[in-house]
Structure formats: structure tokens, C-alpha cells
Length: 232
Image (cartoon, rainbow, N blue to C red; front, side, top):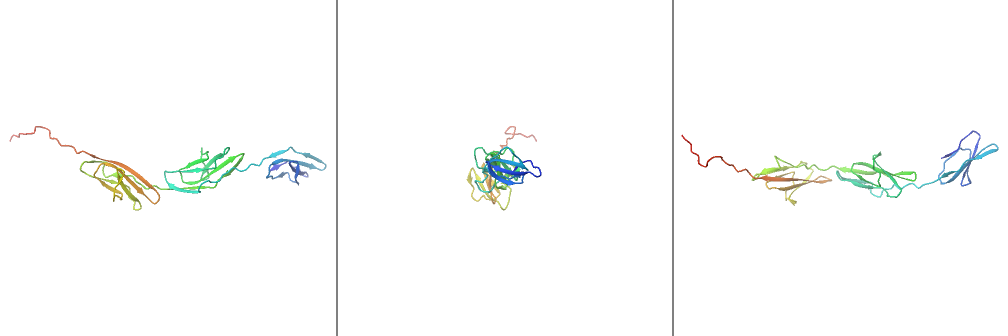
């Protein structure tokens, strides 16, 4: 808006680029085009011309999405979000309409769930992007523990047990080789090696690896002479 001081009884003639733009008894006008504006204020037979005001029209910066508006992935991963990369632009990323401090590049790595957007600014103008929805899937639980220890006695056996969920799919590996039929949450082991468990839920897959060691059994030794004589 352009405004002039107003006194009752005055008339206002607005001009754009030295051409009469509007003749009205209004001390202010709204303009949408660039140019040089001034107003002539008249009161009876007297009039006065104001100084010229330069109005510049800038094109709004780009704030369009160059990717999908929704992403779903497993917790622990991230999605790289992109704003239009243009020289002279400044950027501000938002999460759930809250400013992300320090997120001022044209790209942003989104790890958290929520609604992301960005604001681009250039030449005094700003524009907000549409929202980008990020949804995270929960990982299946995989922690593997033994019935006693991961170090067993030679000749014995041990039980590796993972979190049990009937909706999960399980597969055991030994030294990176699939163990056929080992597809439950537990596994009996009697050989040392590196055991890996692959666990899948409806959306995500995770792995857990344990090292199983079998210790040599101790050799019993009886102290003393090999021949003992007992007196009755």
C-alpha cells in the first residue's frame, strides 16, 4: 500500500510513471505493479506533488517439491529432502510447523517422523512449500542372548534365544551360511562360530550377530605320588 497524509476536504490524484493512475479521495492505494508513483494533493485551488516512490515487483522464489510428498521407511534410516537449489536463495526447513535450527541448506536429511516443509526467500520475498510426510516403521526386536553364557564347555551345547514374536520371521546363519530349517527364535548350538539371526516384521529387517566359543575342558590332576601306601 502507498499512503499520503490525509486532511478532511483534500483530494488525491495518484500517478504512475507520470501518467494519471487513479483519481479518488483516498489517501492510500494498493499497487500490484512496479513503477514510479507519486500523488498530487489538492485543497481548493492549492495543490502539492509528493516525491516519487519506486515500487519493484519481485517474482516469488520457487518452493515446489521435486520429489514425492510422502515417505515411509524403517527407523534408523533417513530420507534426503530437496528444495529447489538456486543461487541467491536462502532456506529454512520446518518440522510440524516448527523451525529446525540450523537447517538452512537446500537439502535436509530427515530421520524423525512428522510433516516437513521449507521456506525459500529471495529479493525480500518468501514462499512456503507443501508438506512432506515422513512415517517411520518400528524395527523388530532382535537381541540374542544365551541360556548361560556365549562361552560353553567343549562337548556340551548351548541355546541362543532371541525375542520371540509370532508375527516375526526368523532365519539363522553360521559363518554367513544359511542354516536350513533354523527358522525359529531360538537355536541350539554345539559348534563354535559366528552366528547371525535375521529377523523380519511386516516392514523392516534387522540382523544380530553373536560369537559362540567352546572352551576346552579342564584336565583333572591328582597331587601326590602315583603310588600311595596306607597304614592300617
